[in-house]
Amino acid sequence: ETGVTQTPRHLVMGMTNKKSLKCEQHLGHNAMYWYKQSAKKPLELMFVYSLEERVENNSVPSRFSPECPNSSHLFLHLHTLQPEDSALYLCASSQVSQGNYGYTFGSGTRLTVV
Amino acid sequence: AQSVTQLGSHVSVSEGALVLLRCNYSSSVPPYLFWYVQYPNQGLQLLLKYTSAATLVKGINGFEAEFKKSETSFHLTKPSAHMSDAAEYFCAVSPTGAAGNKLTFGGGTRVLVKP
Image (cartoon, rainbow over the protein chains, first blue to last red):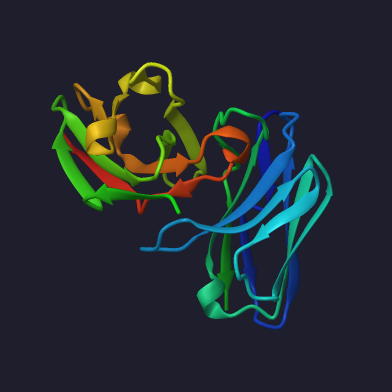
């Protein structure tokens, strides 16, 4: 596989469930990101991992817990979510260097909390 | 802090007409600038990027954008719209140098192409 792969593509979960989103990049990049995309709202940066260390956490509620076990994999663990957490969750990767060549995005996981 | 503003959340164009999507940025120094496209139920795909080389940047699918420092703008254009251009377009900005990996996105502009 190439690029950035996200699984599952769709997820419906109850507010008391625990689930995880998975992201895998095959580009040799050393930084990975989680974004939240809600209807009628700008893209929200949630977490940034650079060289497997979390370097940014934008005031995300603790019911979202990221994990980056290595430079190719990124997870977002979900528990006791709220209906307003329903959104498209996008993973991206990039190469941290002096230049910025942009991010490569996955196709996203469409999450519905019921 | 850097930011981008996209003027117009929705744009409607006729097939074959000019596509013009506006993006203005706010930054104390010239940043890196990007345009991304998102098709329904997909992630974002890079269209083109400005990284302080030529001010007129050509991208994929016939799109181009011009960096104008005096206007702090990076508008996206395509001379002739195609039905396949219907999508949402995002402008993004990042700082240059070693810190240049954080992207801040605009609110997006949804393009509708009429036959």
